[in-house]
Length: 125
Image (cartoon, rainbow, N blue to C red):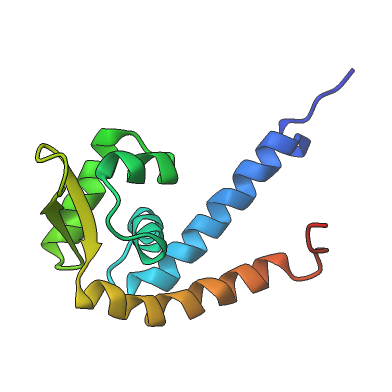
């Protein structure tokens, strides 16, 4: 029995994922945003005031990676941390005006990529 790795579902899905991530990287690059930062921004556009732990859960990233991404977004002036009103040891995450402004610039680029990538596929039923 023969098995060709490049014909396996896992290999094909990984290849598609890599190509999409590279294309996303190119579309986000002009705004100095990485795909990982895009995921964080997208979560905050949907739900501001979450904690870094909640953000880690939403993005499927571990705490050190989440904190690294957040630090870069804070340095860029896109995200700020505020003390949690109940738990003073915790922080809540909020977008700055610049963080909100990126939404209108980036979402059309990402939607265009997703439309291109899913052309010919049937919608989930």
